[in-house]
Length: 219
Image (cartoon, rainbow, N blue to C red; front, side, top):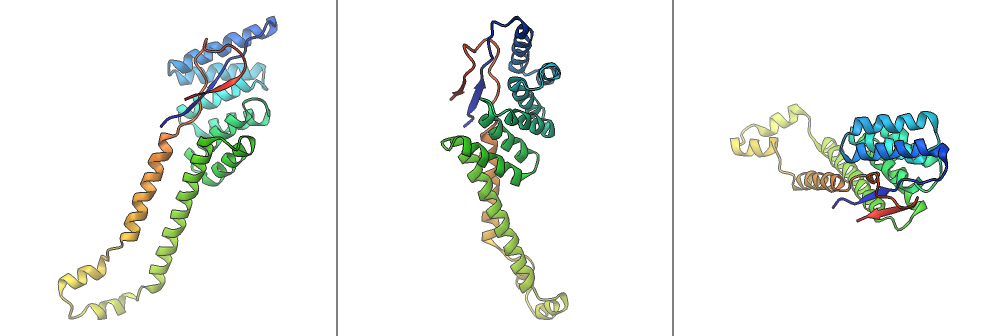
């Protein structure tokens, strides 16, 4: 079940901010139209003139995430989180997803935990954190099982002596032992990955949807 967080665009009476506001709207429209490369370029242009604009860095992270440029997404969400503004908690959540997709499970865990410090009731962060910890536990168990098997395995010469005189069916069973636990762990790991894919990142709202500067959840 996908759960998204909408980033509402800021409105300001300041004429100096008018150009940035328009660029943010354009970036949101490009993102809505799934033109993620162009949206990323637009947000990047904003950041060149306003490096502390958390809306632009958040949007850049979301666009880069969809482009599967997880390193760029990580950098953008890290920048947003450092601003310690209204989007900090959401940036930390997305940062966890970007770290996970980029293959760094431990950093993902740390990011989800930081997100939960900011909002202990964040159900998506709790869910993703539980999934990744479960996956790590399964991997550790698989590694331990493999180590136990390696420690208990006889050497090849001893195995060959033990196989002499056995029926072909018996030899086949010894060479390819059935391990229901390993099969179960593999299935569980695949299920965890599938569940993780179902809980995607929080994205900027389309342009024109905002009425103020608040951040809301679009369930």
